[in-house]
Length: 314
Image 1 (cartoon, rainbow, N blue to C red):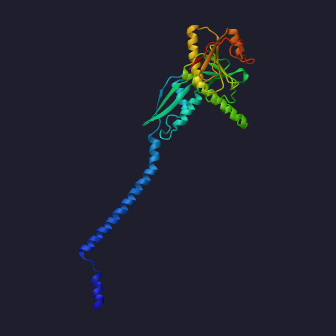
Image 2: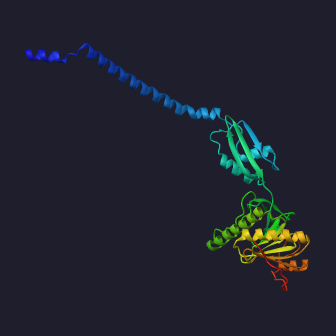
Image 3: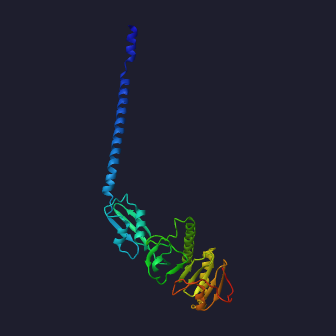
Protein backbone atom coordinates (compact mmCIF):
# COMPACT_ATOMS: atom_id res chain seq x y z
CA UNK A 1 0.00 0.00 0.00
CA UNK A 2 2.73 2.42 0.91
CA UNK A 3 4.47 1.52 -2.34
CA UNK A 4 1.42 2.49 -4.43
CA UNK A 5 1.11 5.85 -2.67
CA UNK A 6 4.75 6.54 -3.34
CA UNK A 7 4.40 5.81 -7.07
CA UNK A 8 1.36 8.12 -7.35
CA UNK A 9 3.25 10.88 -5.73
CA UNK A 10 6.13 10.53 -8.19
CA UNK A 11 3.68 10.72 -11.18
CA UNK A 12 2.39 14.12 -10.22
CA UNK A 13 3.83 17.23 -12.01
CA UNK A 14 4.72 20.38 -10.28
CA UNK A 15 2.98 23.63 -11.44
CA UNK A 16 6.21 24.72 -13.14
CA UNK A 17 6.55 21.42 -15.01
CA UNK A 18 2.91 21.55 -16.12
CA UNK A 19 3.42 25.10 -17.40
CA UNK A 20 6.47 24.07 -19.44
CA UNK A 21 4.59 21.13 -20.88
CA UNK A 22 1.70 23.36 -21.95
CA UNK A 23 4.14 25.77 -23.63
CA UNK A 24 5.71 22.90 -25.61
CA UNK A 25 2.32 21.75 -26.83
CA UNK A 26 1.41 25.28 -27.91
CA UNK A 27 4.68 25.63 -29.83
CA UNK A 28 4.02 22.36 -31.66
CA UNK A 29 0.51 23.49 -32.57
CA UNK A 30 1.80 26.85 -33.86
CA UNK A 31 4.50 25.10 -35.93
CA UNK A 32 1.97 22.72 -37.49
CA UNK A 33 -0.33 25.64 -38.24
CA UNK A 34 2.54 27.57 -39.85
CA UNK A 35 3.48 24.59 -42.03
CA UNK A 36 -0.12 24.14 -43.14
CA UNK A 37 -0.50 27.88 -43.86
CA UNK A 38 2.73 28.10 -45.89
CA UNK A 39 1.79 24.98 -47.85
CA UNK A 40 -1.64 26.41 -48.59
CA UNK A 41 -0.28 29.71 -49.90
CA UNK A 42 2.41 27.92 -51.90
CA UNK A 43 -0.21 25.74 -53.56
CA UNK A 44 -2.37 28.80 -54.15
CA UNK A 45 0.54 30.66 -55.79
CA UNK A 46 1.27 27.68 -58.05
CA UNK A 47 -2.32 27.72 -59.22
CA UNK A 48 -2.72 31.49 -59.52
CA UNK A 49 0.72 32.52 -60.92
CA UNK A 50 0.21 31.16 -64.46
CA UNK A 51 -3.21 32.78 -64.53
CA UNK A 52 -1.70 36.12 -63.55
CA UNK A 53 1.15 35.75 -66.04
CA UNK A 54 -1.26 35.02 -68.87
CA UNK A 55 -3.71 37.69 -67.81
CA UNK A 56 -1.35 40.54 -66.96
CA UNK A 57 1.83 40.23 -69.11
CA UNK A 58 0.33 40.30 -72.58
CA UNK A 59 1.80 41.99 -75.66
CA UNK A 60 0.20 45.33 -76.41
CA UNK A 61 2.92 47.45 -78.04
CA UNK A 62 5.66 46.97 -80.65
CA UNK A 63 8.71 49.17 -81.31
CA UNK A 64 10.58 48.61 -84.59
CA UNK A 65 14.14 49.97 -84.91
CA UNK A 66 16.09 49.70 -88.17
CA UNK A 67 16.04 50.57 -91.84
CA UNK A 68 14.64 48.21 -94.46
CA UNK A 69 12.40 48.16 -97.54
CA UNK A 70 9.59 46.71 -95.41
CA UNK A 71 6.82 48.48 -93.55
CA UNK A 72 6.61 48.28 -89.75
CA UNK A 73 3.41 46.24 -90.01
CA UNK A 74 5.12 43.67 -92.27
CA UNK A 75 7.97 43.19 -89.80
CA UNK A 76 5.61 42.74 -86.85
CA UNK A 77 3.45 40.29 -88.77
CA UNK A 78 6.50 38.27 -89.88
CA UNK A 79 7.55 37.78 -86.24
CA UNK A 80 4.47 35.67 -85.58
CA UNK A 81 3.91 37.47 -82.25
CA UNK A 82 0.42 38.94 -82.17
CA UNK A 83 -1.12 41.51 -79.87
CA UNK A 84 -2.53 39.81 -76.78
CA UNK A 85 -0.02 36.98 -76.82
CA UNK A 86 1.71 36.12 -73.52
CA UNK A 87 4.85 38.23 -73.24
CA UNK A 88 6.47 35.83 -70.78
CA UNK A 89 6.21 32.78 -73.03
CA UNK A 90 6.92 34.46 -76.41
CA UNK A 91 9.79 32.72 -78.25
CA UNK A 92 11.93 35.67 -79.34
CA UNK A 93 14.65 33.62 -81.07
CA UNK A 94 12.12 31.86 -83.27
CA UNK A 95 10.44 35.20 -84.01
CA UNK A 96 13.78 36.71 -85.12
CA UNK A 97 14.48 33.73 -87.39
CA UNK A 98 10.97 33.97 -88.85
CA UNK A 99 11.50 37.64 -89.73
CA UNK A 100 14.79 36.90 -91.51
CA UNK A 101 13.21 34.05 -93.47
CA UNK A 102 10.02 35.88 -94.42
CA UNK A 103 11.64 39.27 -95.06
CA UNK A 104 15.06 38.33 -96.52
CA UNK A 105 16.43 41.88 -96.72
CA UNK A 106 16.56 41.98 -92.91
CA UNK A 107 19.65 40.81 -91.05
CA UNK A 108 20.89 40.49 -87.44
CA UNK A 109 17.31 40.62 -86.16
CA UNK A 110 16.97 40.73 -82.39
CA UNK A 111 13.83 40.94 -80.24
CA UNK A 112 13.73 42.02 -76.59
CA UNK A 113 10.91 42.21 -74.05
CA UNK A 114 9.94 45.53 -72.54
CA UNK A 115 7.83 44.91 -69.46
CA UNK A 116 4.99 44.99 -68.80
CA UNK A 117 3.59 44.64 -72.32
CA UNK A 118 6.09 45.63 -75.05
CA UNK A 119 8.28 43.99 -77.71
CA UNK A 120 11.26 45.80 -79.30
CA UNK A 121 12.42 44.56 -82.73
CA UNK A 122 15.89 45.67 -83.86
CA UNK A 123 17.47 44.74 -87.19
CA UNK A 124 19.81 45.79 -89.99
CA UNK A 125 19.25 45.89 -93.73
CA UNK A 126 21.25 43.50 -95.88
CA UNK A 127 22.14 43.97 -99.55
CA UNK A 128 22.68 41.99 -102.77
CA UNK A 129 26.33 41.05 -103.24
CA UNK A 130 26.52 37.83 -105.28
CA UNK A 131 24.57 35.91 -107.92
CA UNK A 132 24.39 32.21 -108.77
CA UNK A 133 22.93 30.97 -112.04
CA UNK A 134 20.20 28.40 -111.45
CA UNK A 135 17.74 26.55 -113.68
CA UNK A 136 15.31 28.28 -115.99
CA UNK A 137 17.68 31.11 -116.84
CA UNK A 138 17.25 32.54 -113.33
CA UNK A 139 19.77 33.85 -110.81
CA UNK A 140 19.73 33.48 -107.04
CA UNK A 141 20.86 36.81 -105.58
CA UNK A 142 22.49 36.54 -102.15
CA UNK A 143 24.08 38.74 -99.51
CA UNK A 144 27.69 38.27 -98.36
CA UNK A 145 26.61 35.43 -96.04
CA UNK A 146 25.03 33.51 -98.95
CA UNK A 147 21.46 34.08 -97.80
CA UNK A 148 19.14 34.17 -100.83
CA UNK A 149 17.45 37.57 -101.05
CA UNK A 150 15.52 37.07 -104.28
CA UNK A 151 15.43 35.26 -107.61
CA UNK A 152 16.00 37.33 -110.72
CA UNK A 153 16.23 37.00 -114.48
CA UNK A 154 19.28 39.30 -114.57
CA UNK A 155 22.43 40.04 -112.59
CA UNK A 156 22.09 43.58 -111.22
CA UNK A 157 24.87 46.10 -111.60
CA UNK A 158 27.39 45.87 -108.78
CA UNK A 159 26.59 42.23 -108.05
CA UNK A 160 29.34 39.64 -108.65
CA UNK A 161 28.43 36.44 -110.46
CA UNK A 162 29.85 33.29 -108.85
CA UNK A 163 30.43 30.50 -111.34
CA UNK A 164 31.58 26.92 -110.95
CA UNK A 165 29.43 26.37 -107.84
CA UNK A 166 25.96 24.95 -108.37
CA UNK A 167 23.64 25.21 -105.35
CA UNK A 168 21.01 22.50 -104.98
CA UNK A 169 18.70 24.54 -102.72
CA UNK A 170 17.94 28.19 -103.38
CA UNK A 171 15.02 29.05 -101.11
CA UNK A 172 14.48 32.78 -100.66
CA UNK A 173 15.20 33.77 -97.07
CA UNK A 174 17.53 30.84 -96.42
CA UNK A 175 21.27 30.27 -96.84
CA UNK A 176 22.27 28.53 -100.06
CA UNK A 177 22.77 24.79 -99.77
CA UNK A 178 25.24 22.82 -101.86
CA UNK A 179 24.55 19.56 -100.04
CA UNK A 180 23.08 16.49 -101.74
CA UNK A 181 21.99 14.29 -98.81
CA UNK A 182 21.61 11.15 -100.94
CA UNK A 183 25.28 11.20 -102.02
CA UNK A 184 27.69 11.11 -99.09
CA UNK A 185 30.82 11.74 -101.15
CA UNK A 186 29.23 14.58 -103.09
CA UNK A 187 27.93 16.06 -99.84
CA UNK A 188 31.47 16.36 -98.49
CA UNK A 189 32.68 18.06 -101.70
CA UNK A 190 29.79 20.53 -101.71
CA UNK A 191 30.36 21.43 -98.05
CA UNK A 192 33.94 22.36 -98.94
CA UNK A 193 32.64 24.46 -101.82
CA UNK A 194 30.46 26.49 -99.47
CA UNK A 195 33.35 27.00 -97.03
CA UNK A 196 35.59 28.09 -99.90
CA UNK A 197 33.04 30.60 -101.18
CA UNK A 198 32.47 32.01 -97.71
CA UNK A 199 36.22 32.47 -97.22
CA UNK A 200 36.53 34.30 -100.55
CA UNK A 201 33.52 36.56 -100.02
CA UNK A 202 34.47 37.43 -96.44
CA UNK A 203 38.04 38.20 -97.52
CA UNK A 204 36.73 40.49 -100.26
CA UNK A 205 34.60 42.31 -97.69
CA UNK A 206 37.46 42.61 -95.17
CA UNK A 207 39.87 43.98 -97.79
CA UNK A 208 37.32 46.45 -99.09
CA UNK A 209 37.76 45.18 -102.65
CA UNK A 210 34.99 46.59 -104.82
CA UNK A 211 33.79 46.15 -108.40
CA UNK A 212 34.41 42.38 -108.58
CA UNK A 213 32.20 41.25 -111.45
CA UNK A 214 32.93 37.51 -111.47
CA UNK A 215 34.31 34.81 -109.15
CA UNK A 216 35.12 31.42 -110.67
CA UNK A 217 35.64 28.37 -108.45
CA UNK A 218 35.03 25.64 -111.05
CA UNK A 219 38.61 24.45 -110.52
CA UNK A 220 39.63 24.84 -106.88
CA UNK A 221 43.27 24.74 -107.95
CA UNK A 222 42.77 27.60 -110.39
CA UNK A 223 40.45 30.11 -108.74
CA UNK A 224 40.15 33.50 -110.39
CA UNK A 225 38.25 36.77 -110.04
CA UNK A 226 37.49 39.50 -112.55
CA UNK A 227 37.74 43.15 -111.54
CA UNK A 228 35.69 45.69 -113.54
CA UNK A 229 35.65 43.26 -116.49
CA UNK A 230 39.23 44.31 -117.29
CA UNK A 231 41.63 42.80 -114.72
CA UNK A 232 41.83 39.10 -113.88
CA UNK A 233 43.09 38.08 -110.44
CA UNK A 234 44.47 34.55 -110.63
CA UNK A 235 44.56 33.06 -107.12
CA UNK A 236 45.56 29.49 -107.85
CA UNK A 237 44.42 27.16 -105.05
CA UNK A 238 42.73 28.12 -101.78
CA UNK A 239 45.99 28.55 -99.84
CA UNK A 240 46.21 31.90 -97.98
CA UNK A 241 43.23 33.35 -99.85
CA UNK A 242 42.86 36.36 -97.54
CA UNK A 243 46.53 37.28 -97.97
CA UNK A 244 46.36 36.87 -101.77
CA UNK A 245 43.26 39.04 -102.07
CA UNK A 246 44.77 41.71 -99.82
CA UNK A 247 47.87 41.86 -102.02
CA UNK A 248 45.73 41.80 -105.17
CA UNK A 249 43.74 44.77 -103.87
CA UNK A 250 47.00 46.68 -103.34
CA UNK A 251 48.14 45.98 -106.91
CA UNK A 252 44.77 47.08 -108.31
CA UNK A 253 45.03 50.39 -106.45
CA UNK A 254 48.59 50.92 -107.70
CA UNK A 255 47.68 50.13 -111.33
CA UNK A 256 44.58 52.35 -111.16
CA UNK A 257 46.82 55.20 -110.06
CA UNK A 258 48.95 54.66 -113.17
CA UNK A 259 46.07 54.06 -115.62
CA UNK A 260 42.45 53.58 -114.44
CA UNK A 261 41.51 51.91 -117.74
CA UNK A 262 44.40 49.46 -117.87
CA UNK A 263 43.65 45.77 -118.57
CA UNK A 264 45.65 42.72 -117.63
CA UNK A 265 46.21 39.82 -115.27
CA UNK A 266 47.48 39.79 -111.69
CA UNK A 267 49.12 36.46 -110.89
CA UNK A 268 48.70 35.77 -107.16
CA UNK A 269 49.27 32.02 -107.30
CA UNK A 270 52.46 32.26 -105.22
CA UNK A 271 51.66 33.45 -101.68
CA UNK A 272 52.95 36.93 -100.82
CA UNK A 273 53.95 37.65 -104.44
CA UNK A 274 52.06 39.36 -107.25
CA UNK A 275 52.90 39.66 -110.96
CA UNK A 276 50.96 42.11 -113.11
CA UNK A 277 50.80 41.25 -116.82
CA UNK A 278 49.24 44.12 -118.82
CA UNK A 279 47.32 43.27 -121.99
CA UNK A 280 44.53 44.65 -124.14
CA UNK A 281 40.85 43.94 -123.46
CA UNK A 282 40.57 41.18 -126.06
CA UNK A 283 43.35 39.24 -124.36
CA UNK A 284 41.69 39.61 -120.97
CA UNK A 285 38.42 38.32 -122.40
CA UNK A 286 40.22 35.21 -123.65
CA UNK A 287 41.54 34.47 -120.16
CA UNK A 288 38.10 33.68 -118.75
CA UNK A 289 35.01 31.69 -119.63
CA UNK A 290 32.93 34.59 -120.84
CA UNK A 291 29.75 35.08 -122.89
CA UNK A 292 27.81 38.32 -123.21
CA UNK A 293 28.35 40.27 -119.98
CA UNK A 294 28.67 37.54 -117.35
CA UNK A 295 27.84 34.16 -118.86
CA UNK A 296 30.46 31.42 -119.07
CA UNK A 297 31.42 29.81 -122.36
CA UNK A 298 34.64 27.94 -123.19
CA UNK A 299 37.77 27.17 -121.22
CA UNK A 300 40.34 29.28 -119.49
CA UNK A 301 43.38 30.12 -121.58
CA UNK A 302 46.77 31.49 -120.66
CA UNK A 303 48.05 34.71 -122.24
CA UNK A 304 50.55 34.38 -125.02
CA UNK A 305 54.07 35.60 -124.39
CA UNK A 306 55.52 36.80 -121.12
CA UNK A 307 55.73 40.52 -120.57
CA UNK A 308 55.13 40.38 -116.80
CA UNK A 309 56.34 43.20 -114.65
CA UNK A 310 58.53 42.70 -111.61
CA UNK A 311 56.63 41.01 -108.81
CA UNK A 312 55.08 42.97 -105.98
CA UNK A 313 55.66 41.53 -102.54
CA UNK A 314 53.56 41.75 -99.44
